[in-house]
Image 1 (cartoon, each protein chain N blue to C red):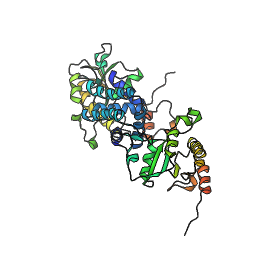
Image 2 (image 1 turned 90 degrees about the horizontal axis):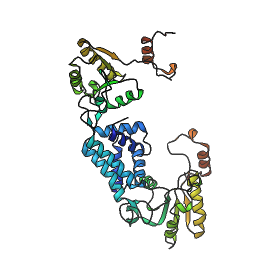
Image 3 (image 1 turned 60 degrees about the vertical axis):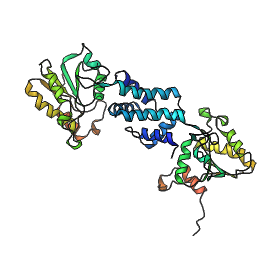
Image 4 (image 1 turned 90 degrees about the vertical axis):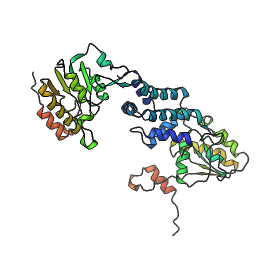
Length: 199
Length: 199
């Protein structure tokens, strides 16, 4: 419908996740009217990410060096490893400022439907990190859904016999939410995981 | 939160219209995992649009030449001009295949709140196109909202004395919609514009 290069841009934008044909058109017209310097900055940011970002050789998080910022930070406790599915989970946990250990990014979760088995995840690399016995606790922070739970169970069964403390993030009611809107499974988990109040 | 270039990309993406922080993050991770050749194509499409696209000297539509495809198309009727606000309105009307005349893109609508007055629109260029008397009908297809109606009224008052037929797109019930869900203004317009059925 549009002249050549405009349609090309709409097509390319439409391939991005969460960008439908209408948003692609809207973004393309924004680009048409934007300052050339701003568009060049976006195009450069895209190319730079591909050129400079790799994955941390130790934990699999995004990194600009051989190792990511967290693995290079000597103030972080190397005896606790928090296992997550994706780099964005690392960011979510870092935002809480609750955790001062290291991470291990699996690169996904076990999902037979999507054809993802244990060998497709960075599990061998995790076992290598546990080999010297310096790690004392493994926190399994995979998503609280079917695939994440299956992955956590798989890892727990494999790693518990090695004598480490293996923990899983608590499931329960979201803070600030309404009890009546919680689904049955979440509410059931909240009961299971109830704690003594020391008052 | 992210290492340098990843955060840069998230920031740049977040500046696009309709892309919030979560979508920006999601797109950035998609880019991280995409093939370098695909990312290069997107970056190039961005730069090409800025380098090659300009606005048609006659109608103001997007164009890759001095004039847009429609103004260059000699099969299009030059005696009817359809006035729209934005280039994307041209595309929407072209999709209907109902109109075989030419367009004039104003570049917006009169909106005192946004500080857009008649002088900020391509009205002078429109009057120049009407000067030689070859245009017989002007269809005002600005948006059916406050600003679009104000712009249509402004243009009609200015141009009707020149002896042209000045028309406005019909307002009424959207085809395929439910009468009970139509707002009062639309339903009122549908009554006003009711037509004799010739059966």
